[in-house]
Image 1: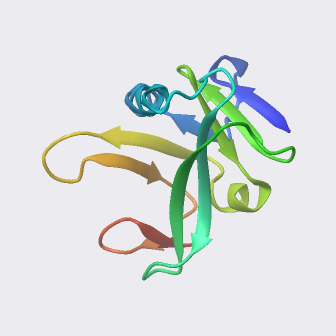
Image 2: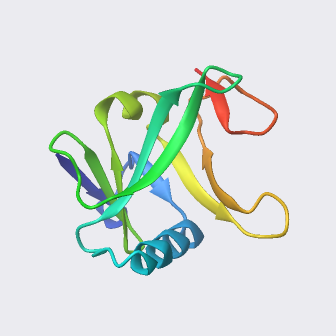
Image 3: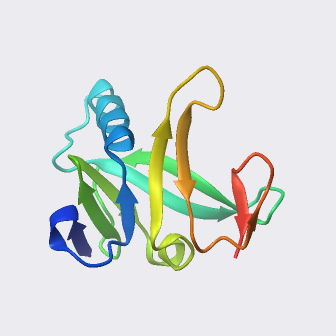
Length: 121
Protein backbone atom coordinates (compact mmCIF):
# COMPACT_ATOMS: atom_id res chain seq x y z
CA UNK A 1 0.00 0.00 0.00
CA UNK A 2 1.36 3.41 -0.85
CA UNK A 3 0.39 6.45 1.17
CA UNK A 4 0.56 10.05 0.02
CA UNK A 5 -0.24 13.24 1.85
CA UNK A 6 -0.75 16.82 0.77
CA UNK A 7 2.36 17.89 2.63
CA UNK A 8 4.57 15.43 0.72
CA UNK A 9 5.12 17.74 -2.24
CA UNK A 10 5.27 16.67 -5.87
CA UNK A 11 2.45 15.06 -7.76
CA UNK A 12 -0.31 13.56 -5.66
CA UNK A 13 -2.25 10.58 -7.04
CA UNK A 14 -5.60 12.23 -6.29
CA UNK A 15 -6.16 15.72 -4.93
CA UNK A 16 -9.02 16.36 -2.51
CA UNK A 17 -10.45 19.85 -2.11
CA UNK A 18 -11.14 21.08 1.42
CA UNK A 19 -14.90 21.16 0.70
CA UNK A 20 -14.88 17.53 -0.50
CA UNK A 21 -12.88 16.41 2.52
CA UNK A 22 -15.16 18.25 4.95
CA UNK A 23 -18.29 16.72 3.44
CA UNK A 24 -16.87 13.18 3.27
CA UNK A 25 -15.50 13.31 6.84
CA UNK A 26 -18.87 14.55 8.07
CA UNK A 27 -20.61 11.65 6.30
CA UNK A 28 -18.08 9.13 7.66
CA UNK A 29 -18.62 10.41 11.19
CA UNK A 30 -22.38 10.23 10.64
CA UNK A 31 -21.91 6.51 9.90
CA UNK A 32 -19.87 6.15 13.14
CA UNK A 33 -16.75 5.21 11.16
CA UNK A 34 -13.26 5.84 12.55
CA UNK A 35 -11.81 8.52 10.25
CA UNK A 36 -8.26 7.59 11.35
CA UNK A 37 -8.65 4.22 9.61
CA UNK A 38 -11.76 4.35 7.39
CA UNK A 39 -12.00 6.37 4.22
CA UNK A 40 -13.65 7.08 0.91
CA UNK A 41 -13.00 4.54 -1.84
CA UNK A 42 -12.81 6.17 -5.29
CA UNK A 43 -12.96 3.73 -8.19
CA UNK A 44 -13.70 3.35 -11.90
CA UNK A 45 -16.15 0.81 -13.27
CA UNK A 46 -17.51 -0.17 -16.67
CA UNK A 47 -20.74 1.64 -17.51
CA UNK A 48 -22.28 4.93 -18.35
CA UNK A 49 -22.92 6.34 -21.79
CA UNK A 50 -19.22 7.18 -22.33
CA UNK A 51 -17.92 3.73 -21.32
CA UNK A 52 -16.49 4.21 -17.80
CA UNK A 53 -18.03 5.72 -14.69
CA UNK A 54 -16.84 6.83 -11.27
CA UNK A 55 -17.87 5.07 -8.11
CA UNK A 56 -17.51 6.02 -4.46
CA UNK A 57 -18.25 4.25 -1.22
CA UNK A 58 -16.99 4.21 2.34
CA UNK A 59 -14.61 1.45 3.41
CA UNK A 60 -13.49 0.57 6.93
CA UNK A 61 -9.87 0.20 5.82
CA UNK A 62 -7.76 0.11 2.66
CA UNK A 63 -6.82 -3.04 0.77
CA UNK A 64 -3.13 -4.05 0.73
CA UNK A 65 -2.55 -2.84 -2.86
CA UNK A 66 -4.48 0.45 -2.58
CA UNK A 67 -2.95 3.86 -2.92
CA UNK A 68 -4.04 5.84 0.15
CA UNK A 69 -4.18 9.62 -0.16
CA UNK A 70 -4.60 11.59 3.06
CA UNK A 71 -5.64 15.23 2.68
CA UNK A 72 -7.59 17.64 4.89
CA UNK A 73 -8.41 14.87 7.38
CA UNK A 74 -9.82 12.48 4.74
CA UNK A 75 -8.33 9.18 3.62
CA UNK A 76 -9.06 8.24 -0.01
CA UNK A 77 -8.47 4.64 -1.19
CA UNK A 78 -7.81 3.89 -4.87
CA UNK A 79 -7.15 0.41 -6.27
CA UNK A 80 -4.34 -0.01 -8.85
CA UNK A 81 -6.66 -0.58 -11.85
CA UNK A 82 -8.67 2.56 -11.08
CA UNK A 83 -5.50 4.59 -10.53
CA UNK A 84 -4.61 3.98 -14.20
CA UNK A 85 -7.70 6.01 -15.14
CA UNK A 86 -7.99 8.61 -12.38
CA UNK A 87 -4.41 9.34 -11.35
CA UNK A 88 -3.95 13.12 -11.19
CA UNK A 89 -7.68 13.77 -10.72
CA UNK A 90 -9.25 16.17 -8.23
CA UNK A 91 -12.18 15.18 -6.01
CA UNK A 92 -14.48 18.16 -5.50
CA UNK A 93 -17.76 18.79 -3.67
CA UNK A 94 -20.22 21.34 -4.95
CA UNK A 95 -23.27 22.35 -2.95
CA UNK A 96 -26.39 24.09 -4.14
CA UNK A 97 -29.88 23.37 -5.27
CA UNK A 98 -28.86 21.72 -8.54
CA UNK A 99 -25.97 19.35 -9.05
CA UNK A 100 -24.93 19.12 -5.39
CA UNK A 101 -22.51 16.30 -4.73
CA UNK A 102 -19.05 14.94 -5.31
CA UNK A 103 -17.44 15.45 -8.71
CA UNK A 104 -14.21 14.15 -10.21
CA UNK A 105 -12.17 16.52 -12.36
CA UNK A 106 -10.17 14.03 -14.42
CA UNK A 107 -7.37 15.30 -16.70
CA UNK A 108 -7.15 11.82 -18.28
CA UNK A 109 -10.69 11.87 -19.67
CA UNK A 110 -10.75 12.45 -23.43
CA UNK A 111 -14.50 12.94 -23.38
CA UNK A 112 -17.39 12.69 -20.96
CA UNK A 113 -21.15 12.43 -21.18
CA UNK A 114 -23.44 15.40 -20.69
CA UNK A 115 -24.10 14.63 -17.04
CA UNK A 116 -20.38 14.30 -16.24
CA UNK A 117 -20.81 10.94 -14.53
CA UNK A 118 -19.11 8.82 -17.18
CA UNK A 119 -16.02 9.29 -19.32
CA UNK A 120 -13.69 7.79 -21.91
CA UNK A 121 -9.88 7.78 -21.91
